[in-house]
Image (cartoon, rainbow, N blue to C red):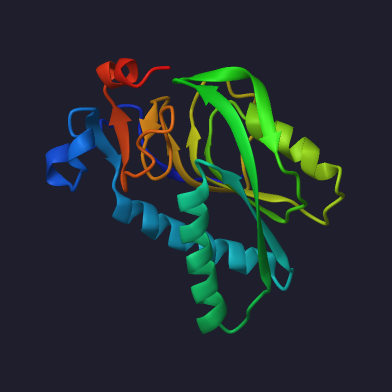
Length: 208
């Protein structure tokens, strides 16, 4: 079973004043939860694990938009570096699928999937209940891929989860609503480098 770097339930994050935060978001954020440098280091290790496990298989990397684009891009950069400098290399092609499953800070009843392509490696930003990923995997199986591996930057510990776990996990986090590093709240905060905890008043400010 895959394990990520465990962030404990009592962990509150870091003082945001110790980091570079865009001024237009300073009043909206409670704390920095996962600093950008730690994200990049963990992503580099995931890339190494993936390359070791995939052997000589051609990788079709499928990015789940929009929240997964930063993680996907950084993960592929690390995989490309290993391809260029390692003893072995594998061909990689990329594709994208867009999924919308949230409005404000709550899951929507309907999951919208735009674009369906076969994949051997699936890049996802965050897994909470597993509902979205199960819907996507069901679609992918229609294309009869040789294998499907899922890598997720974040997995939340939540009582709603049916037990689904991806093959590769960056961080296992408590059930907190986080933004940044392409994770959004109604399209805001994707431009943050760090993963941060949002203030309650900011949820009201950007609510639709």
